[in-house]
Length: 267
Image (tube, rainbow, N blue to C red):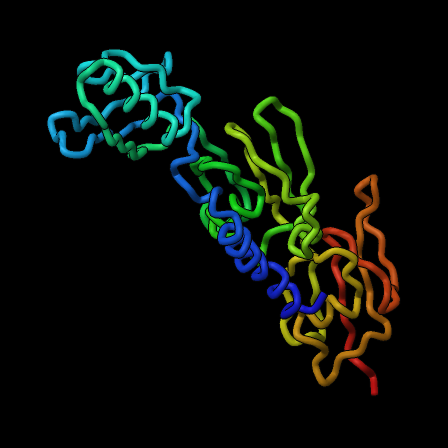
């Protein structure tokens, strides 16, 4: 795959992810966040400043609120927790028509991890229904020069699901699976190949899927004015670790850690 096409492929992620978020407003609505232990809540009641409170959800899923005491909020969305507090204030005879607002100041209980070849690895709050593209977008997208075309979704229960990033970015919705709290998405480093001799930019390059010898030369900037594909040598280690030397055709597909030597033309 030519270098410019490879960069376009991975840059396409950011566009697709943002469109996905825009089309699914519920995924970005903090009111859909499911509350859990250690979340910090900023609670307020309209026209009753004395009831403003910052409350940390306990490990048992409770908060303690003025007038009504302990309230179980774990497992509720912020909207549901607002309705629950309003109901208790009203049924307790404290406020006739309470308007309760809850903002999550510190997302701690519902998180997913993104590791590996992304711009901003780390943990991210799981707000509403989030899928692989949404989480990758939150992490700043994949690194085009080092990310492989394959990722691994490690579920909280230990199950592992492969994610084909090329298919995902090409619009295959089967790869855009939903993520759950405790999941980790790992974007692995792409395999590499080496190219030396009569090319414009010798060095180490990212190995794209099904990359041929000709495409590898293009990734290295093309041949110098003295270079030729004829007589090229390919060094490759076999399954036993023994180095073999081949004379590849231009259509041969490279493997990870191959070393391609481009010769100088005699004419």
